[in-house]
Image (cartoon, rainbow, N blue to C red):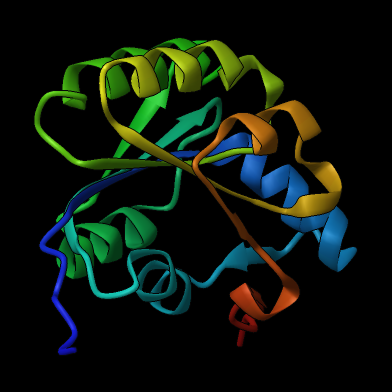
Length: 162
């Protein structure tokens, strides 16, 4: 039997603050960041990326990071007023009819109702998070769980001042 390539369209929605806190705890470094160039292909596993949206509350996000996400993945960074849950949930609901799978990068149990809603709409929902900081109920509700590990991160070293 030959392999049938599944042409699935995927949206990745990242709760930046949640993921950043999780990887800082995982790596014991405030300067650790997700290595998107390694993680995205792993999450997609051959499926097509429809869009990547990084929701971030508070202080301005590095414009270099925003540019890289845009150049490499047509990604966008959306600054949030308070927490990312509401804007991320609204965007996920809007995308539900346009994609086959939504990957939520967050371990926050606040997304349980969203996961249930999306699955009710016929969307496959996957969670990508650091297992230690991810809510068990969220992992259980999802169709699939991708564990984010130290291998998916790097420690950012600020350029030395001359």
